[in-house]
Image (cartoon, rainbow, N blue to C red):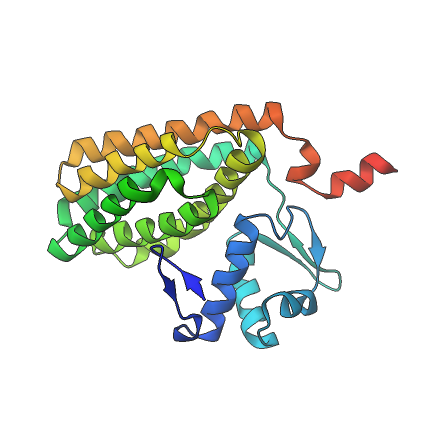
Length: 242
């Protein structure tokens, strides 16, 4: 079963390649597939119990997303977490998110706003009791809704790799760097932005998006200070042992 807004959705409702992509993306985000880990297509087949063709298709997409490195004749490697690179990419994401939330606030229709307000109620009721994995599944749904509200199909596929990269950073932060902090700040930052979009308060939505990106930026210093670099790239374990 796959989850989106907190309720299970039968994974069979999705095409096999999409199932494979979603499952591998989730395993990358929660570091079950360790940053820097080397493995094969056969390993992935064993893990997610899907055929070779849909896994090849998913790996091809994740390679284009820079989340998996394909090494001809040497298998696959899960992209390490490169804090320097990802901090640079956060600047790109900040600008793109401004565009998205502005357009979503300007163009959102009643159906989009009702769905966003439903998520607001969920977050107010259960947000602080969620773990980061459950929140990340809901966050993905939020991103899909905001993209749909813009009315521009190009947006979701453009932003999705960035969202995955930063969900993994958020997972590392909340599980390894600041495990006792809880999700209060994360949840509240999202609530302010979603409510502004649903209320069509354009400038407030943009300001809330900027605040959320600043909160993400603050995570990097904590991760750099608190996390063993080998957790961000498991190949460092071998280098340090040799």
